[in-house]
Length: 460
Image (tube, rainbow, N blue to C red; front, side):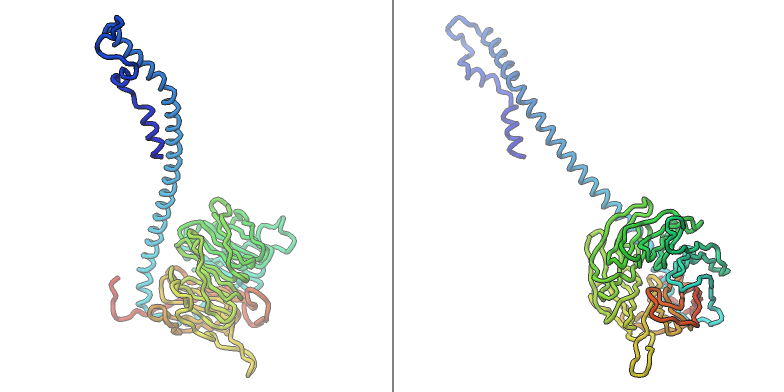
């Protein structure tokens, strides 16, 4: 670049009159051939004019080259400004996420100073409406409604306060996909956006369906997975949807635009669970590859964690830095993104079952966390939902109390305020039919959470 401008400077520099005169051999005096000074002056002017004309074309050519250079610089500038704009958007999202986390921390700070006490069994409500096992559920952000899904392919919207059935999206039979509006295969997962605008559900037919949570109207289908969709989560504060599948992949979708964004690979076995909060990342449980992975979507990288002795069947984020998992080895583990191994593990968290000498740990089929607090819950098929309190620095899990519940606890969700916990229960495990608990009732259990304030007052 520097040599170009030096060349331009040499070409475009206008010669002074003295130089021209020396080149043609004229002087200020008469040249001895009868030419006057006036004539010489006129010739000087003519020569200067001719020289400028001769250099005009090179100047124009050089100007065109300069314009090309300027145009290229403008393109680079546009690219730089675009990158700055994207960076500003990302910073704004991060600030909004931090604000939401701060507000949640204020609530969580109070929750951590309160002591949870076991509810009266008579206060636990059962909502029945599904013919087969409940596999998943979500609570609306305003905590007024619950959506549940089942192996009967249906979705039911419930009213929390009265326990009434608001709407049912009936399931269809296999082979009626072309004419039936809804699922025609077992529904394995659901997610609702943080603003309550979209509800997503995934099934064994590789489909993701998007619904309007208010009217329960079907909006559209998202296709792309090559096997059952086993996990769904919206990034908080956005309409970005993460989906996990038994095809071992994670896909990113823009629900607003009804568009596919990208696919992430890494797991060596079918993915059994997925969760996400405010950051542009998600966490997944890899089933029998025995790994937990943190996917940093923006950086296009992943962190891999090992710790369970068996299949990891469920996962939930406690906050942006910690998560809880459960598996068929009967253990519950708490992780931090800063360590590759669990910071705390409880083995045989729900006891064992089987004949004497052939005992097997009860599988942990679901876990839940009250976001930004130290309270987690786990479910199995040992006739109880267990609540736990994380120790200092999330090291250690102390049992708080258990709530009697017969059947497979396939899904657990805390309300945002922590006022209640909802359990989705069925006669069968959500991922298979290894055995059946006939005395179990397929439905939802709403568990009120009571707190007893400590005497000391904590200033937030």
